Structure formats: C-alpha cells, structure tokens
Length: 269
Image (cartoon, rainbow, N blue to C red):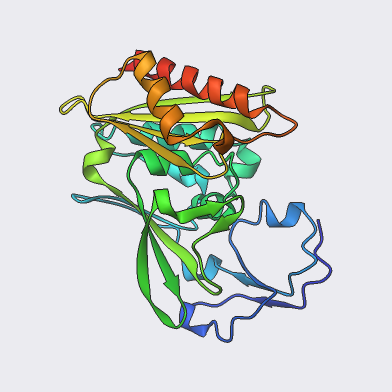
C-alpha cells in the first residue's frame, strides 16, 4: 500500500543524525506491516537499514540479535548445538508467515509491533531476554522482555526511542523448549500461544504466554507441576478477565485452551 501522506523519508547512517523527533514520525524496519495498512497520522519515516543493526552475535555470555535482523537470517544461522533454546526462535519464524515475509520482516519489528499474536514475544519472555533501547540524544537503557509490552500495540518506548538489540542469556539458551500454538484456521492469527522453557538441571520451568492475553505473560514453577497445579496457578495469576474476548474466541475458551497447551508442553520434557 502506498502511503501518500508521507512528506519526508530519512535514511540516516548514524542514530545521532536523527534530530527533533516529533509527532507523526515513525521508525521503518522491514516494512511488512506498516505498508499493509493506511497510516493517516504519519508524516515522516526514518529508515533503519543504513544503521546496520542486523547483526547476530554468539558469545560466552549468550546471544544478541540486532533489531533489524531479518527473520530469514535468524532462521538460517548456525548456533551451538547445546543451545536448544534457539528452537523456539526458529519456530517463531516458521509460524509467522511465508518466506516472502520472513525475508523482509525483522525480529525487532515483530516485537515492537506489540500485537497479542506476536510469535516472538512469548519466546523472549520464556528465555528471559532483555531489550537494549536507544535514543538519538540519550543513554541506552535495558528493559526485560516481560516488561516491554504494556498493552495491545503499546510498549515502554518513549517518542524517539528505538529497540537496538535483543539479549538472551547463555544459560536460558541451554534450556529445553516446547512451542505450542493454536489458530482458528491453518494459517490464521493465533488464539493461544504457549512457549515452555525447562531447565532439566534444576527442574525450573517458565511458560511464556501470548495471543490469549493482550500482553505477553510469564508463569513460573520451580518444579514440573501437575495439571491441577497449572490450572490453580494460572487462575490465580491470570483470572478470566485477563484473557482476550473477541470474534475469534471467547475469553473462557482462550483460558481453557491455554491450560491445555501448558499441560501438553510438559509431554516434551
């Protein structure tokens, strides 16, 4: 879709060249969402491509993913064999869309779009990721993945701020992973997404929940719970009114389905 209301297109080679951020400005990454819908309030697009933030770095401390890394690049990268946690990242790419989208769509863009059905957000929560946030005229800051999204298409980003990197600690990358996702159609938007991360050394278990609730949620156990314990903890932490109710599914159904997916994920450990 053409955005006829765009008056200015900027392509900076360094972030400090972006000055006087104002209402009606937007960062542009892969563009796979922004160009699919009318954007009547946008006047200026700031393209991130020339900043070269698409790196993937594997270190002894863990994994860092540049915000403009395409999903296809992430999917094709060779990671250490003991990093079983990256399987969740691969599933996040595979579940999103066809190669035509993943060759352009960026990891950071999917996270910052902040829709409930994001395939990446629950993964980052389950893997205990942190986000590095930059501003053209301010010092970087870090935000835990579980705290980044505050509502549907709402995040903690202030005007002019941009996601720079995703950091995943090495320890989390060695956890075992289960990725469970249910849609109302074969290639539709998910109504519940459960990413389970399990540490076989300590029996610690994290569930990253998405699609069923407006923002990604984390549910943690220090042991492998029973089905009843999963239900009790989920009801206590996320009552029925926390679940999305819309044309695709009722809140009651989403809550029930989430419990089923959480229980089903344990069969993989």
